[in-house]
Figure (cartoon, rainbow, N blue to C red):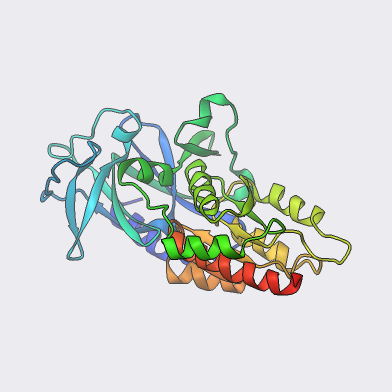
Length: 314
């Protein structure tokens, strides 16, 4: 496929409707292995520009800033972060995937974009084993016999640019005043970095919580949580969108279509923070949608739901 056609296809396919499928752009880094990134995260694909402004004392994988639509964005060598040889973007043709993550825009330097691939989330495998515990690999799938590695970009961004996980003191104080031992929050996210950050936020509020990495596991826990009164013992649920086996849209739809679970408050917590995904979340029955790594937004929702739960307990 010609490069300009590929770019046009990315724009068109980001309108893909929810069907427990992911449309990913595959691309190569310097190791010539194939990687995949959800097209919903991609704003544009550019040939690496010549004008790059160095940033003093920045992370070594940040090659500088580039001008994107009259705004400076970081240019991050994703392969170098993974331990590969840096891309020689000054002397060789390379490309930038301009992506949106949790209301921020970042540019990822890649060797070459490849093709677009559609996969059902049930075809995407979560790797297991000690070797993957600290890695940046979050899932693997296959296309025409070739492995496609899906990276935990949230972990990369946390390591490279840092992510704020601190709640405002007044929200911490209010949360600790109203939280009771009966409250329990369930969160589901396949990203190890995201799980750690969710736990950090909820720990600051002093609220009991369980974090799992697969939606089917979370759905089973919810079904088992229904008490004699027909209510779940979980105060609310946070869910990611992109997850192997079952995505967050399907997970939310399964909750809201089940009469025994439909009363549970579900907030989508995703790095896919554009307006179209918020609208799709509403269509699936989600009660709220917040961009990932906005701690005060998460805290406000928790406080609101805890206050409602307290009125029922009193």
